[in-house]
Amino acid sequence: MKKIGILGGMSSASTSEYYKIINKEVQEKLGGHHTPELLIYSVNFEVISECITNDHWNDAGLYLAKRAKSLELAGADAIALATNTMHKVRHQILSEINIPLIDIIDSISSKIQSDNKNKIAILGTYPTMTDPFYKEAYGQNDIELLAPKEHAKIEINRIIFEELTFNTIKDDSKTFFIQVLEDLFQNGAEGVILGCTELKLILQQTDFEKLSFYDSLHLHCEKIVEVACST
Image 1 (cartoon, rainbow, N blue to C red):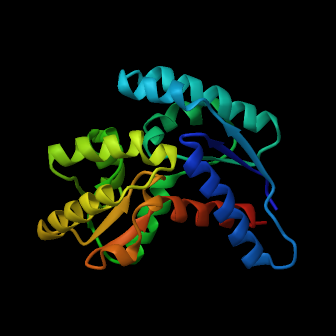
Image 2: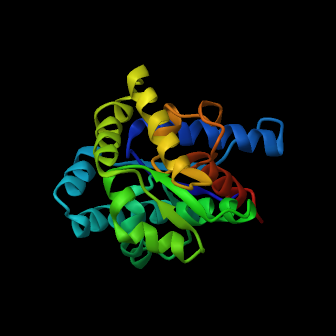
């Protein structure tokens, strides 16, 4: 198998899910006692959180690019950035490394395209739901993003940073998400991207079956496993 570098810690709650899912899928795919060869660089999430809050994207890019290079030097054959939001700085990471980046946006887009859908709601951190980068990135794959209303974006961002990144799940927050999904459905969404790797902790397809769920974490893990097991 290829050795995969995981640039994680954004947050530790989602990175632990990456580890569990990738191991489970490799074992199911190859059988026996097969497990993936993974190198995990878990960054200090406080550094990333402050960069997001203060709009210091270049600093975040430099910080992550340096750590991605460390994974390459440690022997990684490919790198996965275990977060949606920080794909905004993927160009800085790509400029530092000489191995492939397993892109989360491409992983999600491929599944949406295979389902012949193109008007898709996006849930995630405030930057993921508002920054033109994400709209343009998905637009290159002929996918139109539909974001929640402004007050909902603010509350979703709060729930992610104040609850989900600490692995805290609250019933009233889940109820709020369901209300947001209903509003997006009424506005023409055909599906919804769980565009933050923590969102799978609180939302499942069975919670709202009117929309097709595109779990970014699981779809990214599937692509990581595909790369890891390729010859």
